[in-house]
Amino acid sequence: MAEYKEEVQSFRFACKTYKAEMSKLSEMKEKLADASLSSIERHELEMMAGFLEKDIQVVEDTFQRIHETCGPAARVIMWMLYVEEKSFEETAGEMGFSVGGLRNKVNEWNSLIFKSDDSI
Image (tube, rainbow, N blue to C red; front, side):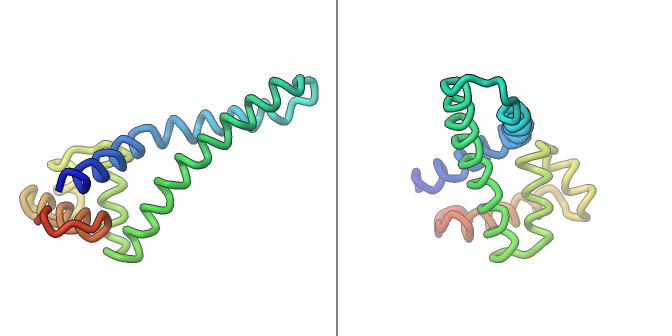
């Protein structure tokens, strides 16, 4: 059970940093286009961009898995909660759920994605 909770928390944290990482990656790619960079500067930027790309890919792959496993509505709702950081109350209202019903669905989806029988 602890491992499941850690996976969910890790994913939620990755989602919180996703937008900032996308922005930072875009800035790095612009800098990499600068022909005046030294080879050391270029190497450092390429390494950092590689790390960001891996973090971003984990989030995108997980959202693809959510879509495939739980459906497009689950993907939208999880995006609203985890990336946009909307509250359960706000998301439930926008998506036509009760708050309790939404919490139950999110727990169900998390258990499917992160493979836990203990979350429901």
